[in-house]
Image: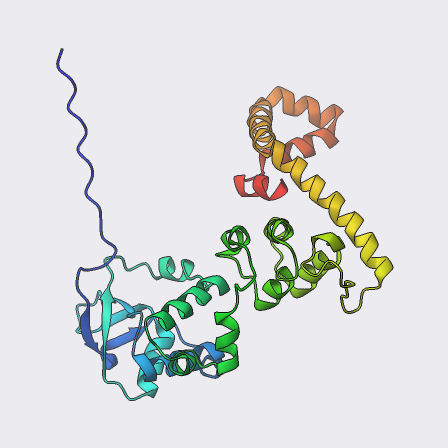
Length: 305
């Protein structure tokens, strides 16, 4: 018996043309207008400073204009193009997209996490780039660059791995640095589970950390605006919170499966006109709740848990 021929792998569609092309800036048509405050923003100043020091790092993304003219539509890089115009540049090297859907690019924009920025700066320094040049390229002063370089000093690798792509500011790491290794990991998990990386929240975690879990265990714990009595209560409440999170994590997968099955079952029930009529006449409050269950989306199920 002959084996069935294996299905040939489908070819991969590239998102961009293989080579960048140099285009006159006047031939590039923006798809959106910049806001009035765009050029006064810190991000714009950083782009201008970066261009003046090292040139364009990430090429703008364009696509040929469908009207067959010798112009190009700008999908991504509106601030970069404006910065180039302001610096007097006449042309720019661009990536040519094979997809003219601008929404795809706008949706995928993500901010550089502090840990990623730290690693980028450290790597540049290791390659011999002076700190002064990095500061000029990022439009930052030298003290800010040095703080970013020292961002992870005293932070354990496990906590770094947990927060590597999270918007945890320098203040978060300042607080973590006061904790011992195991407590750093627990605190990082609390931040992620709550999706809260504010200074107030990390200081609350620090206030709720038992003295023995601090690096300076013999030194009295002081958090601005929190009394010793309040810190003692916070330690107890934070311990209960961690126990609750741990118990939820243990049953998360099973609970998610149960809720998905329940949603499907209730949906089938409400597909029966006789059942709906009976509930409407005898238990309207149940009917409303059942309808709410069937309208839950997968994202809402995840958020609810």
